Length: 428
Image 1 (cartoon, rainbow, N blue to C red):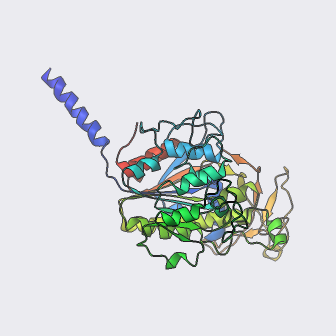
Image 2 (image 1 turned 60 degrees about the vertical axis):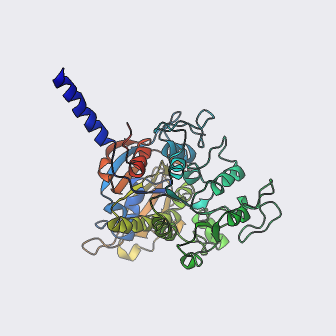
Image 3 (image 1 turned 90 degrees about the horizontal axis):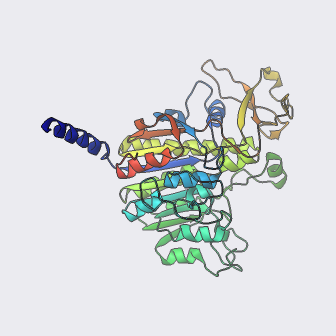
């Protein structure tokens, strides 16, 4: 009996120690709509096939399984609900499951960000899309419909999050009110949420030029950088005709926003930052290869800033993952003589797959950065669809507790990693 008791106490102490890990900061970077092929394409274009992106430098990797309760491919709002609560959701769910706020994997009826706020952890939400985009909004908002933009925007503004950077000015202003970017507000309830934010301690900024001039000592910060998205999610041909660039030039990139947010939040104490590049998803759904690669490059730069911070602050966990792949991008390589680099690509591959070059369909090919032998290679982007698909989503981790990410992981496990970094508990 005595031996049995000692054995029980021994294993109990092991269980206890396994559930009391170091707590720290957590950065979750969500380049929406991306998979392994996207990162391969960016590597080839930006640094060459033999070199490394910031994404490549992350020390752990997980093969992400992205199915949801009622479909094998996720939606953005279902994926965000799963990331924020750690339990499976349905296609239309937006922070609700079966029309109720779910019990999270931790056993609490709170999203992981709301639990962090409750426990005094400083928080930040960044989205290059509009403020109601689910990849960030679901962490603080629950709604029966993703399209209830005004309600969701109100939830985000009034959530208590310390730093909010996004577009979506039109959902923050009442009808009849002109904004910095919005020609007319879209709120029917008469609320001016920007004025509400100012009255409740937020410093409000609007442009990338204002960002570096903003004090890190501000109590809270709201960045409103466009009327809707900070990018123009149209095809290359449509953008050319309209005289538009991929991104609005007055808006900061996700890299600039993330760099500022890390510095701002880290000065206050333990923090949790969720940063989403939405352009990688929307440009993919428009089959705009040029836009998608620019968006992905911005996300890779944001990852680089997170790595720099972790090198100096090893008590920080970085997790990065998508929930599906937008457009099903693949790289198609060509053996074209240097004299023919400027020859337009065919509109489609032999099986009918649309092909994109630098300027869109039937334009000249992309050309890689030099490989280790100095050679450059032409290539095209082939698209499989206009929607979201499941194929090669990869999760990565770096820093505190990152070695726990390995092999096959479920989409519900993203929550487990975030929870481990924030609260020091590895959930069953």
